[in-house]
Amino acid sequence: MPIAAVQGPRLYPRRRHAPVLAGLLALAIAGAATTSHAFDLEAVAEQAEALAKRPYQGPPDGDDAGAVPDWLVGISYDEWRDIRFRPEEALWRGANSRFEVQFFHPGLFYDRTVKMRVVDAEGVRPVPFSPSQFDYGANDFASRVPQDLGFAGLRVHFPIKQPDYKDEVIVFLGASYFRAIGRDQAYGLSARGLAIDTALPTGEEFPWFREFWLVRPAPTAREFELYALLDSPRASGAYRFVVAPGAQTHVDVEARLYLREGVGKLGLAPLTSMFFFGENTVRRPEDFRPEIHDSDGLLIHDGSGEWIWRPLDNPRTLNVSSFASHDPKGFGVLQRDRDFDHYQDLETRQETRASAWVTPRGNWGAGHVELIEIPTPEDIHDNIVAFWVPDQQLAPGQPFSFSYGLTWFGEDLSKPPGGRVVATRRDGGTHDDAHRFVIDFEGRKLAALPADAVLRGVVSATTPDGESAELLEQAVIHNPVTRGWRLVFRIRPSGGDPLELRAFLQHDDDTLTETWTYLLKP
Image (cartoon, rainbow, N blue to C red; front, side, top):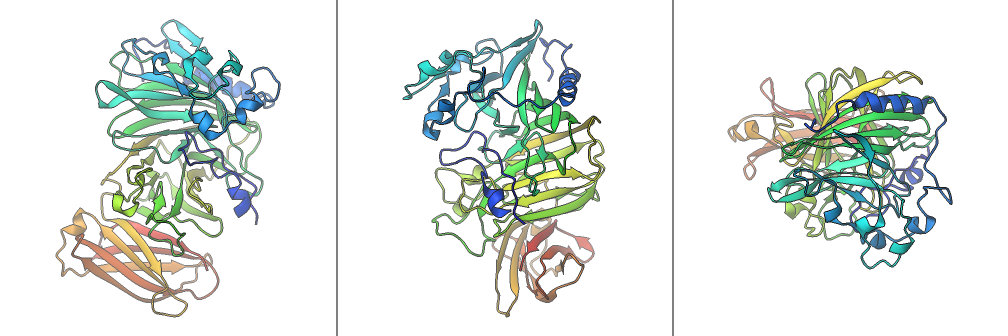
């Protein structure tokens, strides 16, 4: 079934990156001492609720007042990239603050402006826009930019590497997209405020943050607080973000949603990334790089306590996978492979890409983590989406509150605490109509086992109807090079239905590893 939905633009795109997923789905189918405490999430929620009771009004366009001029939307990526905010114009620059905020210029993908306001002891006031805040580089159109145009987004700076230099730690730019990094990571995947009807035939709706409130931090603050007003044709919402930069950057998210109309699928805490090919790719494109991806797997800590790992794929056709759970403990999209030799890309350095982990606050009830893998012919598209879908759908006019923590990190051996999958490979093996999988597991507990220990691979393969496939053989082999263990098995499908594969390692009755899962299509 063709899918009419399309993804929005990759936020803060790299040089070679075009609009994110545009057409792909269609083709596939802190509190600060100086803060005024009169302003809080409730103040934004009142505006969101009022918005939901009125017909949706999108951003101005064409010749409307406040619209981004068509000529500015039509500039090239290099022209937009050459427009740089002047650091000396940063919010709170030289004001004895460890945090500074810089802003993005509208144009190209960013065809709408968002209101920026500051909250401090004096109250709430707007952040004025001026073309003089920007260096237009080699562009010759600075004099044509409207004096009151407005900003497209913002980025927050804080010294996470050196005390005398403020690094960029989080960006809000494009629709409801945002992304962050810890001390030693580079930008990769993105988060969003909300996903609506992703990968449904009716088409996806992209909410956007139309207004931000930036709370002035105290001079010694290590957390930054901001609020955002979300809007879309069928939904509005109030969001509070508390950003704590560091070796791992933590973002606490608190939200209140209101629907104007019913939606088919509500995706909470959405994450978006890119996977072009990896070691599990059977048919590789011609490319000197051994692997190309910003993330290589989905990790879930199920409400039952089980850890589940799903390697990502760039499928031939749209893949939508669901992992049912009740009160999930967490989920995330990870870049687990940190070996430069596996990428060989001196420009993008994909081994440094940040991972993101969602920790639900409170009880999220019954629902499922949904993984959407979209075919892409190039590595310039974000083709991976993951989010939580509650079983109980939100009714129009009924407020819905939820909160979660979002951690951006590099290597974290506590996720999971036991053995983990470090590589998935597959080929045809030596049997007709069969598939061979080679899965490498590593971890402290696995490394401590003697080489002559007897480990058992627990492997299952079922169709959507519950029928089993033929498991031809399996073996668990000690890897003396990595001190890990390798599970090899061959499986022969019994028909033309997709197979859901699961596997983990046991020693006696002790489960040693997370559960590896894989969707094998005919």
